Amino acid sequence: MLEIHLAVFLFGLAGLFGKLLLLSPFLIVFGRVLLASLTLFLTLKILKIPFLPEKIPLLSLFFLGFILAIHWVTFFHSIQISTVAIGLLSYSSFPIFTVFLEPLFFKEKLIKGNLLLSIIAFSGIVILIPELEIKNKVTQGILFGLISGFTFSILSILNRKFSQKYSSLLITFFEVVSATLFLSPFLFLKKLEFSGFKDLILLVFLGVFCTALAHTLFVKGMRQVKAQTASIIATLEPVYGIILALIFLKEIPSIRTIFGGILIIGATVAVSAKKA
Image (cartoon, rainbow, N blue to C red; front, side):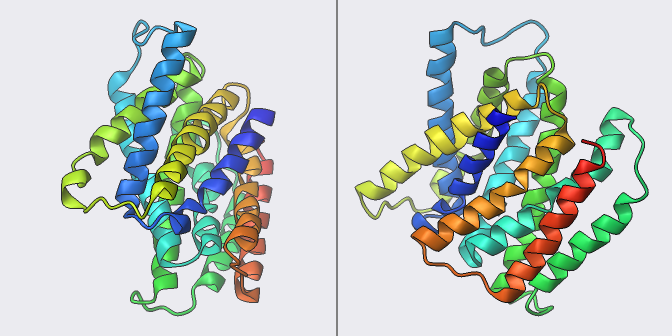
């Protein structure tokens, strides 16, 4: 539980980098997963953990890396075109997706009462939308945040499955390595420009602490904690992120955002707690 709590705090902190780094979300995530890959490679070597244990599902883990890349790119893009609060709150709807997807993967019964809570969470998202106009940046931010939440739901469910058999460090390593490979073509499509030494330091912190450490802690925690229980803890991520954005970026959420956020977080906590 403590491992997941610390991971969620670091995930919340990561949201600020979407504003602090003046780079394309593809390049931010590429730098993040590349540094995380190097950190985890050295960690695995030091701990003498075998890189290829028997029957490790490499294709499945590389697929998860692809999903991870989509999740983080859409997450940072959501924050860049809107605000940290909008990006985090729309993404934090992922426990609702988990409730409906987890029974498909683990053959568990779907609780009908969760439908009402899903409607409440959806109502919170609707409140966040300033206007039904796709050209509106906040509306776009919410849509990309929902995509990020959906992909993170898939990651949480499948990581729960693989963490029962394999080292969390190893799972995370293959996921970030494959994400690095998937994103590497964007180095030739996007212009890579650093505004200074600060950008490099921020990328190192994002890759080592908010990625390698946070993701490993979250996957390791999933070994003992259900995906839905982890989802309850993860609802603190937007709370951490919004408070940190208020302190460091002076981003003050509107009353509309706060009210919508209360509905989303409240519903996701309730819907996750029913099967935690």
